[in-house]
Length: 479
Image (cartoon, rainbow, N blue to C red; front, side, top):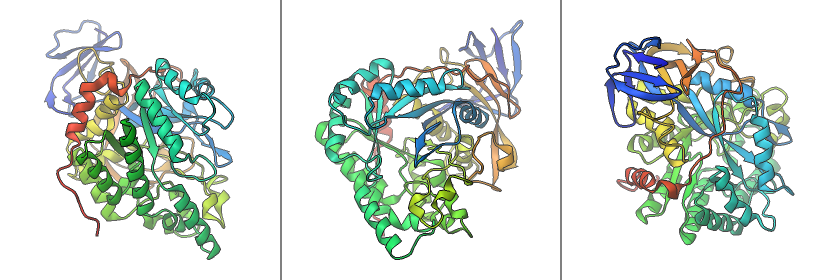
């Protein structure tokens, strides 16, 4: 034995109990009463929870977009993730026009090489439907890339049409992959943006007016309908509002194979933040936009009931100075996105601290279900004999205030500046090696490794379980 955790309360998606946990050669080898461990290192976890390492399936590291590049690379971004309790990410490798999907994977592999502080996988973003792309899509699962993302938004930039979405859904069904969609009606958003600008409405607060909830709900319903037509599974990223939730529920009543996530900022930020004094609202420009308090409560309720499968960060870290400021005088030029890779676990845990969700659901939405959906389970996402020893010692009694100075990312602000929080990652272990001690990164960039993932059909039983737990109890009516 290399490592023994004593005195901690083990938390899984289903159970909470006190037991010792032993690690050898990077794997969990025993849970229960561990006898004298010999030369093993002892971790005193008394008064703390033991969580499986967090899994963030929605990040954008070292990504060119909006005529700029995100502030975090694979070193700073994954160190920040580790300090927050996340031990695996799935990052978006972005195809460029005129380039193949294989080239996108190669480019992102090089970005991560020797830099990643935690384990990682890739999705691929499909932008350019070149001749032969369907064959290339079918080859990607053999490389361990089993999820393809398309944008229904950003007209003239990343947006694809319905025919492209259908073609990718068809290919994904054939090769056991999962299609992810950014569901907004890009034509409607573009039209509303231009109308607002023509009326002299240029401030950040008009970002929300240019893409109201109906823009998201319509595209959500359309993406679901297209997936239903070809019989392919679908994953809706960053769902934000009651109207889109209702489309998800209607689909499940028709037995459509669809899952959805939300992101940390939609649980804590509202559209009011876009109207902050001066140009401060630019920090809160991300897409889809923040919604109302009522939408926040609907999202928390959907997480509690299991209707939403995961909480991701959508970490798209644009600096306020020099990047967000490009949109002064024209909100449509503000790079869309916000940081959150380090804050994700803490901000999701506030649902436990406030009684909105229990601690088992917290583990489910931040680690276990993401692992199951994206082909990482049971190596990742759980504390079980044989699983990777990705372990977070979480102090539920820790109280603090989030500040930019206390974070490890490279971007120059946090959405949650000054917020009081309860709970934090005290120690973090990746495959049995300690990478965070008392909140300080102690690991070595480059220790993170690429994880080849399985597709949804290779995990039929797991996916059926997730869909059963996500079945709607009722339909809600928007006022």
